[in-house]
Amino acid sequence: MSFSEQFPIVLGSLNTGFLQTLRLFFITLLGAIPLGMVLAVGEMSSFKPLRAVIRTLVWIIRGSPLMIQLLIIFYFPGLVFQTPLWGGGESGRFAAAAVAFVINYACYFCEIFRGGIQGIPVGQDEAGMVLGMKPAQIFFRIKLLQVVKAILPPISNEIITLIKDTSLARIIALQEIIWAGQSFMKGSQGISGAIWPLFFTGVYYLVATGILTIVFAKLEKKLSFFR
Image 1 (cartoon, rainbow, N blue to C red):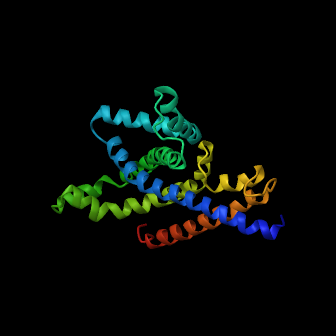
Image 2: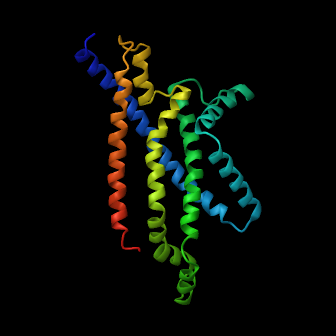
Image 3: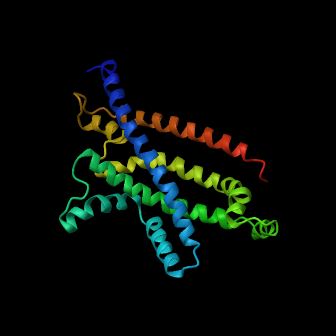
């Protein structure tokens, strides 16, 4: 099969795989950002047992490889409890991957949120109270945009890393873009021994990270009045 015949087949497969990658990326963000905020609030709680539990969870998740977490979350229920929680289909693999990614990135976002909130000078709370503002008003009217400004660079780095980390989901045979590109080396749709589709997947990541970089640069520029 010539290259001109291979290309549309490979492109279609890579497009399908990249859609799966984008699904995992957006679902992770939708789950990890609010969960990370909840964990950050819990980590700053005055209730010591809650604070200790969350700090231990964050330490374990951040200290172990995401690949191991994917394997444990997908295989552990079936191997230990003899109840395949996720099933063997593509939807089950995607659900397991999404859970693993949400938990992992929520713990990283937790530390970023906590650092951003605690980095705002206490004097701003005191000034707001002097003006008769309630704690919620102080946070949303005075501190929130400053927190966003402070956490935007580390958050943007994590989000750009996330789009690339989705490739780890192939460890549980999720058919994302790297899995699709690699399949043509082993044999897929009449094509085998072709390595160029795997290298071509890099173009998708470069375009995606390029778009994200431009978006975050514009956001940082809009928030540049906080200096």
